Length: 281
Length: 327
Image (cartoon, rainbow over the protein chains, first blue to last red):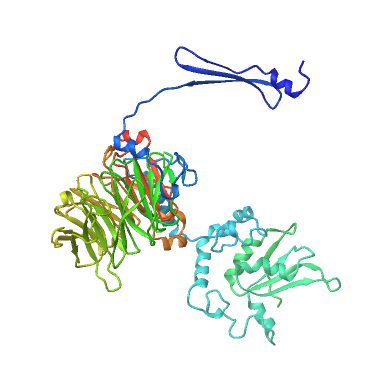
């Protein structure tokens, strides 16, 4: 019985080496692995002498002593200067296409996308849907479910194009601006501000939760266009939201878009209802 | 295939060259050193030290006894290949652009740049015995070639011509005895970057910054083949055996590399079918433009040197030799 580790090593059988008739050398050794189990390792090797004819001059050059920076170094490649790189496949093809495949695909995709207008499905902005800054407040699947924008995308594009056009158009000259709004800034306080306000396209938003603020409402609606006024009904004593708000847009198209997009959407666990505000008159 | 990476240089490679048997590979770079390597395993045989400027060009004679190198330090040096000793140093007024042994190893062609008021020269030195005592400091011929700057030059068959590639994309045939320009042909739009002779020197390949490589017949300077790529080319070489290929390499200018993505760098060696002018494959690996390509004289391996300071020696796999181009 082995009593200590030294004896244990001795207990392993001695390695054996023998060569058979075919010139195959078999080397068998026993070892105890990490789990304490005995393993048998068998290595079979065959030596073959290959004769290669080389040019005499080449053979002579192989025996040249090294010189310069390599002076005195032993024969064989020095890892400091010589390394073997990663395996590289040279794929030869007759068509001349395979190698350029990647580039062409890339180019084709580029050309395809060149004239494509990127349209966000959530806010209809000119960015990808995944990059939409409002995707958290307006879920993607909700946007897809909203039927109106999908039906008339051309209409919105037209409106957007006009906005993004290079030439500046005064708000009252813009298509869709209320014909009555002449002079004065919309929503500016004045003797007839209430009158003007009524002529602006205004939405009534109801079913807001208590802790909503003006900023939240304007955050929710400003993506659709310029908002001239946000009024949030607050409780006189507590200052909490009474559950409804008015949002006035400069442009009727924007208001319409907002109405279609936000009406019926969840916000703070409640389903918003958006409709045209009835004139207070 | 697994390339052998040779890291003997600290700066970008300018030229690499195999000797006649292909067992030795010489590389020169802007870091002043000339390296000699065994091509089969990448072992460095030694270095040739003495230049104090960027080394632009190197050549070895056919018996692999003498090496000549040309540098921006206004000298060309003759070396003993076996031990790295400098046998002779020729001084010039300007940088040496191109050096080459003649086919019979008796003459060396040296092309110097025009600079600082000095005209370009095309000089021929005799190196018949190749010892320090017998090599003359004076050229056998000294010409001042007219026209745009010569960027590359090579001897034609039987030393009957010198073929020179110029900065304006033209190729000129020069008589080595009189220095007269026999004929010229403007084959490229932009400067020639490389000119390598076929094994029998009856035709040669040129590479140019105008993104194309062309094969021309030496006698007539007639364009036989054109290989048009999508990147400026720095080098082109003809595969001597096994496959009818040419290898071209280049890439966008080093100064433009940082402004574009690496995928667009196009730092690949491209294999083109020599006869059919079709691209057949690419070998990637360099991190910068490929400055120089050389093919082993037995066609079993090739090496490329890049702006990244590496020389990569590739030994072809077996399937390379069995490949047949399907039309």
